[in-house]
Image 1: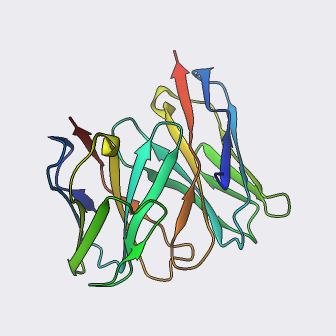
Image 2: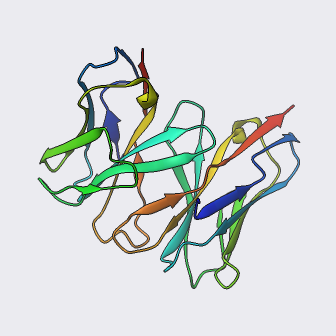
Amino acid sequence: DVKVTQSSRYLVKRTGEKVFLECVQDMDHENMFWYRQDPGLGLRLIYFSYDVKMKEKGDIPEGYSVSREKKERFSLILESASTNQTSMYLCASSLLKGGTTEAFFGQGTRLTVV
Amino acid sequence: KNQVEQSPQSLIILEGKNCTLQCNYTVSPFSNLRWYKQDTGRGPVSLTIMTFSENTKSNGRYTATLDADTKQSSLHITASQLSDSASYICVVSADSWGKLQFGAGTQVVVTP
């Protein structure tokens, strides 16, 4: 059974804290993605990576950074959390040259910044 | 402006009835269109994937259609069940690298 695992289901952090969201996949996928999901807006791409140590900005990268030191792990970093980063964060992975290859999602991390 | 628009935003249907969800997109070029089901508090799960050459694809009681000329897709749910209550998300891929454009989703509630 394929699996994308996010380290936390729920997180509460204070404004200004540095926050790490971890994602691990066991499918040997090249592509990994971080999205945030807000009501009425759908999923919006923050960053994606198509190889170890490679990263590309998505549609809303401001306030975020990422790290991919190993193929199976993709981390999202909020350098200084702000209340407008309160959201559901979803990690996904897929094979390189996606084509019709399915993207698999983690369970999501609901982050609240207070 | 979102390149993937879904309608309706939400709907309520009686158990056993059918319903159809709509998706219009402007993403270009077009590689493939996917429908995902997202249960509350969980990540999306793929239902169907269609390329431009496919105009219908089924997965159990879910049937997706695609008209690449008009850039429209629909998802039809037959004989709805309570477990069909979820958000249904239309997703369009513009390239072969796997970058995806998401619609905002249609929230479906099936009542007994």
